[in-house]
Image (cartoon, rainbow, N blue to C red; front, side, top):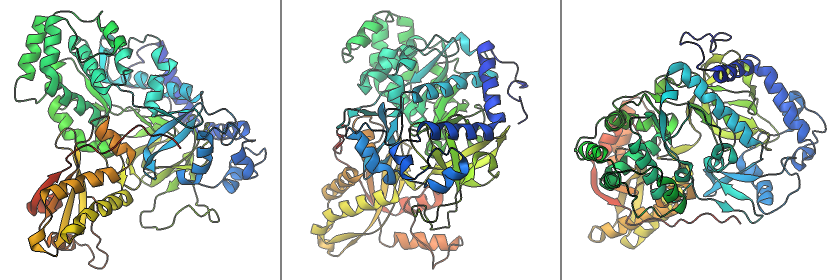
Length: 600
């Protein structure tokens, strides 16, 4: 895209003066991406020069890239964990950051089965708010008139804990929604929500969802966009409407609030919103009472112009279901962010989901990129032979890289684990397609299960088969999103050495639960607290099924010498083969154990 391409867009001028300033800022940052990056790194290193971490590598007062790259290693969370644990335990000395750590952001990624703790500082809230402030000015170029209505967004907070040292640990969005930047955000006619803050900030997921849905129904004619953070979250809201529309209609008909909503702040807030409306109640009963829920979003909210949800990466699996419920409305993926850092935004938010590219904003952090070579078994854990990383301005279109960041909050050359493909440049800033999360096999919501975790869970569960003299010969898996909520499906081929003593249904259901108990805390929270993942399912297949799977792969060109059983499948013919060989299915009989993590 050419210089000033946003400002001179054929889509028309910016919607207002505030938008024009935001778009000009994007142009300035991306036009001078390399020099902005140089300044960002120098600022980070200068302010943190006397931290224990940087002094340990004898960086001195140097702030240039060459010295930084020659002395500071590329690291993973496991490398930093001892230092992070000291901060969590109460050490307030400048270990990673000269600025005091204000809280920990809990990543959806895990280490040893627990959420990763990402230290952050107070000013990062302003940096995140800055990126949020750029989203609507871009969207307003593509969708006009958003100031004439509201957005129905299903937004939630999650549980938080305190570390032994007294610092709060919580997800990044919970931190943002509870911040003054969000709660006291100035009125913006282009960014008005139907959901009151009281509903968003309610810790009870049922009461929060119920109230947000009720407000959305009352203002159905005003809704111009419907969204959630992830596609799975929006589908969960649709499922909630399927299960609760009768009570919602009853509340609207009588102008009263469901007694199950007990939160005092919500009840006070809703007192000014509730009103009897029998016509609206009749309409909801008519639409929701039909068996066919196709296009239900546009039937209930007829003025919806687009869905605002993340449908890249693992969330792409939900696109067909979203199309069914929305009648194929455009799906806008507006930004790219994580607990570690907010990275950039989509400058063409109304594009097809398969074409989504995020433009890195070079002022957010210092970015480096590790060329991704899937065939290579080398790692960067060896500090004697550091990898050759590429700067933001020197990337090659079409190539894949793993993202490495240095942040104001004290992460230095930290491997995020995201694999990105360069699709082009906006001015001198690269644009990326999100390829995948490194090493993740299964994901339904915010959960991320890798091959090692799955293997450990299978090994743990298979111990329950010993009393039947039975073992798991082979296994694979897939994330089933045909139902709401989605769930993990594990295919097992068993070797029963005593046919008269085969595993019972009860035993195999206990195997399902044992697997769930073995999975990480993010998965278990999604199951127990968020209800965003359904019970795990084991499908037992006939003996010889995995040999057939190998034969099929070889028939398609795989080498018999190099063939390995895929631990996750998504290719339709393979799944059809597996399902045609299923002899029994078993579901987890109860919820796994989960409580808010206590930080040791």
